[in-house]
Length: 289
Ligand code: NAD
Image 1 (cartoon, rainbow, N blue to C red):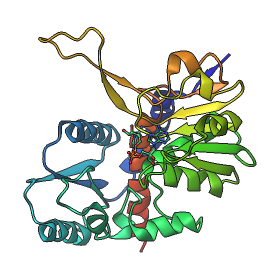
Image 2: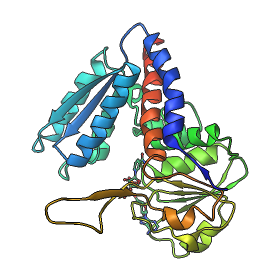
Image 3: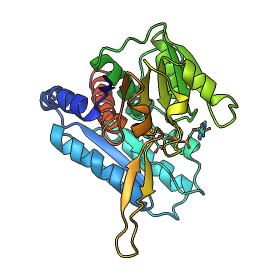
Image 4: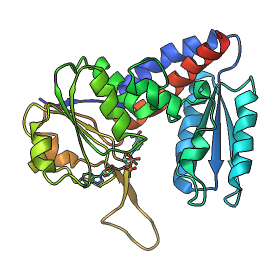
């Protein structure tokens, strides 16, 4: 029987512990979210973070800047948050408008408060397998593996996707846990033969349901990171039906493999949980300095 890697169950079971730790703190745990513009998708993700914060008793400071803001002004906002002692973590809600340089902006965040783990300091710590903030999706996936007691060491992990936000940190995190890691991307010609050789397959491509039954074999663990909004087949002009699907064709793949994470309800909830675990870590680093 296939095991469902249920991120909601894991998140809910770990939320209580996070809530208790948060309520024991001297100061209120506080995350600052810097948003530029007003993208609907970003607003949804920010709402999810606010909702989670409320559940564990943390605070979210949501700063929304206008799309036409100059890069220097964004830097100035980050500097203010860096020196604000009531703020423990800072995230830049991505994507940013095209005229802003995401990489330059992120480097302005104090690495201790960089709870998305995207500054070069945290990237280097992950590279060196030293303690730092690991990007939330990668941390969440490993937590999912630990919860379901799925061994990692010595196993062949194939990651599809090599983004700075997901693919690369996921690959490094598995490598740091002793796995044999292969990274595939758009330029990989033999994806199907690579994915079939995996013990663990992590897909973060942003390509709706492209991993079909032909990409997998029995006994594999499949983690679907993709979040793709698909228009329903029953689309009418009056009502816009939207359905969220992953990068894996769940109906085809789930009967074959030994474990799989669903979309929604798999990696997504783990990412939010991990962001707040990173925030608590940041609090400890700041207050214990
Ligand atoms: P991205 O566009 O930055 O990177 C996608 C990567 O996938 C690239 O390296 C590209 O080369 C590769 N790729 C795309 N199509 C491919 C194909 N057909 N074959 C092989 N490689 C292919 O995207 P991202 O930010 O890494 O996000 C990936 C997906 O994960 C998106 O759907 C995103 O919404 C989702 N996501 C989910 C969470 C979560 O918490 N569940 C968090 C972040 C991102």
